[in-house]
Every structure is written in structure tokens, then in C-alpha cells.
Amino acid sequence: MSDAFDCVTQHVFRICGEEQICVHAGDSRHCEIMYHPTYARLRGKAIMTEGDPKPTRLWESMVALGRLYDMRGDDKWRMIVLDCVMSSLRGRSLRISRDLFVDLSDVRSDMFEAGLATWTETIRGVPPRRVPAVMRKTAIRAAYQRATDQTRETAFERPEDFLDDDELPELPGLQASSLIHSANVRDPAVAEQLRGERNGALFHKNNCMDAVTRFHEDIRAGRRPDVTDRAAKAPMLARRNLFGSSHYYYISDFLPPFIGMPAAAEALGIPESAAYQMVRRGTFPCPHTRMGRTLKVPVRPLMYYMEIPDAIVHPDDVENGAAHASGLARRFRDPRRV
Image (tube, rainbow, N blue to C red):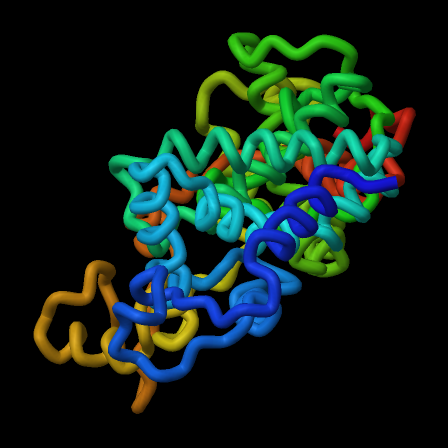
């Protein structure tokens, strides 16, 4: 049975056929570029199987033609953009359907509707190169929203609340098993739990929970008093005075204090060569230091510049968030591990 993705693909192939298609001017007769592929070839070049569509000149031209044809009352290029964006989500939609037990046709319908709505909403204020990535991100959010509307029992309002808004990585195996039944983020205790669970999900996604667990064992055994004492001074921590000890820590306490310039440049989204040029010009946005022949960037100032909160979290919440992301959420917690 055809779903929304199949219908869009069939429609576009029907209107494009086997004729050469011009992504520069829309009509090869008016184009100075000699090479004009069929839609099948163009589609194969535009679609990415994983990850957001890269902001390339190809995508910029496709979106620009979509806007131009919309003004003419012709949806040809709008549907081409939608087909290429939605086709890049076929694998993701299958995983969402399988992991969250939602009908595949419903997932893809939600994705298509969200992508089409985003196309309209991004006419102004979003560069053409970025439009496909925004459409893709919104489509993924819509699919996760349907699943969590059916079985919302965690401290999270939405699965993407695990993550920063700038990025929506995969959440493999997320299940509906709950930590709490109703979340009111105005409650400091619930807000605290949300912070820990969100970061636990991120740690799980980045495959570093083994190291985090060892770090937690050191905290619970009292081998990191410098970490827990610093965090315990903060107000509004629900379990700060319970059971005679505090196990809270700042996220930055787990991270390395310094990272190399290549990693910092990648985090900032700039080329490594440009980062070194900025250092030479004195325009690099974060403090940096030289260790021998190597430039290093301190992690905490980098987090501050990137507006990444250095959250105070509790080990129990972090581990529960990781368990939710892996689909193995604990149903009971040992009160002695506080």
C-alpha cells in the first residue's frame, strides 16, 4: 500500500518523466550550463541517506526554483524538494515506526505534512540552503510527537526534549516506560529530573555511558568530593540534604577540561584552518591556551559561548535518562543510591 512518501515520489516522476531537468533556470533552453540530468539522476545526487541535507548550491538552486514556481502557481519544484527531503527520511521513519510502535503510514503522513508546512513558513527568514534541513528536522519532530502523544508517561514533554534544538540525533529504542506520570516543569524537583534525564540520553546517544557510570561510582564511593561539594552549594536541589550526602555534579565535571583546536573548531562549525587563522588574528571567540606545540580550548568557556548550559545533575536521573533512550528504563530505584 502506498504511503505519503510513495505518492509524492510517483507524482514527481510522473511530471518529470525521462526528460532532462534544469536545476539552474528551470528550463534548459535558458541555461548556460550544458549538463542537464534526468530527474532520477538529480534525485540520487540530492538525497542523503543519513543526516541533514547539506547546504549545497544544488539545494539552494532547488529551493530557489521552488519559490519561483510557487509564484507562478506551479508546484513542480516544491514537490521535487519535498520528494528529495522526505526520501532521505525513509530509514528514519522505519526506525520510529518500529521502536515507538506507530503505524508507518501515520509516521510518514505526519512527516510530509510537517515538511509541507515548514516550506510555507520558511519563505522569509531562512536562507534557501538551510530550508531542507529545517524541513527535515521539523518532520522528525512531528513523527516523534505522534508517538509520545499516544503514550506520554515520562518526565519529558517530547522525545526531542532529550536534545538541543540545533540538533536532533537518533533516539534508538525509546520506549514508553515511565519515570513519573505527570510532569510540571515549574516544580524544581521535576526540572531537576528533566535535566538529568536529558543529559543521560545524550550520553547514551554518544556511547559514553560506561565512562559516565564509572564516574558515578566514584561519586557514590566518595572519591570525588571536589566535584560534589562544588555542586552541592547551588540552591533548589531536591535531594541535596537527604541521606546525609550529595551526589550532584556539573556536566562539565565529567568532560575533559580542555579539548584540541580541531575538536573546538568542529563544535563551533568552522573549518580548522579558519580557526587557526582566527587565533592568529586574535578573533577566536573562546579563550585558548598553548600546551607545548598544541593549542587547547577550555571546555567550560566553550560551553558558555555555545550557550550549552553547564547543568547540575544527579547520577540517578542521568542513568534513568540513558535507560529510557536505550529502551530499558528501570521501574524501581534503590533509595539507598541517593
